[in-house]
Amino acid sequence: MKPLLLTLALGLALSVSAADKDGWISLFDGKSLAGWKANENPDTFQVENGELIVKGPRAHLFYVGDVQGAKFKNFELKLDISTRAKANSGVYFHTEFQQGGWPAKGYEVQVNNTHGDPKKTAGLYNVKDNLEAPAKDGEWFTMTIKVVGKHIVTSVNGKVIADYTEEENPPRKGNPGRLIGTGTFALQGHDPGSEVHYKNIFVKPLP
Image (cartoon, rainbow, N blue to C red; front, side, top):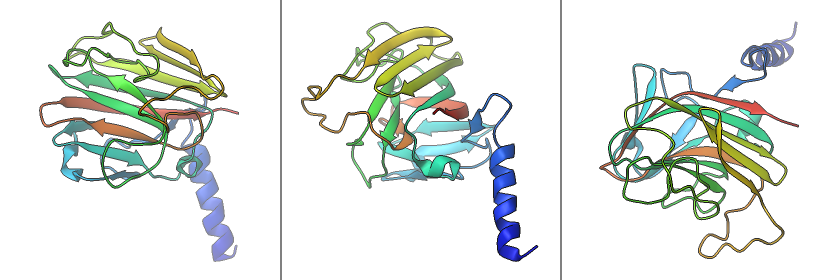
């Protein structure tokens, strides 16, 4: 077999084997930040004992790996998360890498159980907020984000938290880029006083 064909065949085999029988594909290997790119303060993100620990000055960690070319439209994303006291973080989708600041493109799904911000975990930040924490600090919970067309559903441990359908030309005062589209995922490091742990990050691309 020619080298180019062999390389393509191996790549196809790897991409197929990366998905389990239900179509879930891992985005985090539990050992490194391979496939991810941090912006302004990269030391905010560390990997220890199979966990991705977010702790430090404001920064965002963007998925830039090979799955779907890091461009997702319809998908289901699930992550295991554990917050520490008064911690704030978030998971962005349909976003894109930027060098600094809060991501201008895409939606943010809040991660916050006891931080002073009243907008709590699994709400769609500044779009469909959740004002009651669905989980406790120090305990692992599974957050799921599902997007099909204009419909977004978030859940924690199987309980639906936000169910939202984007209308035509929705009002987005202060957040004009917070719209359904295509893009990648990002994890937020909010501030030096916040510590949040992530693991078991999987995506299931949907038609």
